[in-house]
Length: 108
Image 1 (cartoon, rainbow, N blue to C red):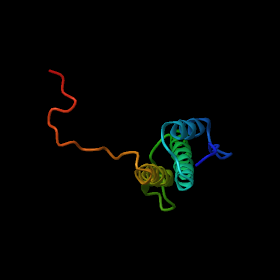
Image 2: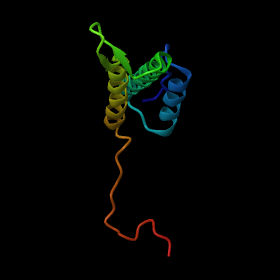
Image 3: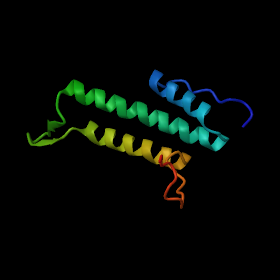
Image 4: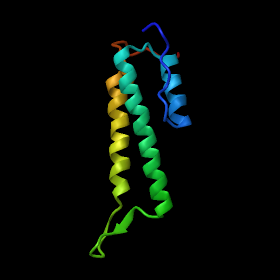
């Protein structure tokens, strides 16, 4: 990719910072930008759900029959956080090269 991609509009300051840092730290192709954008959007969605739960004051809520249930935002946050991890895996960030040298990285 020749031009440095810019973060999409509508992202939070935290996600914009992550987007820019990622672009600076890794070689990025056009297909990576789309995945990175979705990761940033998922970060924002998870943070919004967490803020909504904090405002609600509990992870639990009552359904229409008065029974305790998990607040719907719990599922939103869980799915958004899973999407972040899946996106990062898709970008190949979590891959670590394994070495056969058992002394690698050791200081004697």
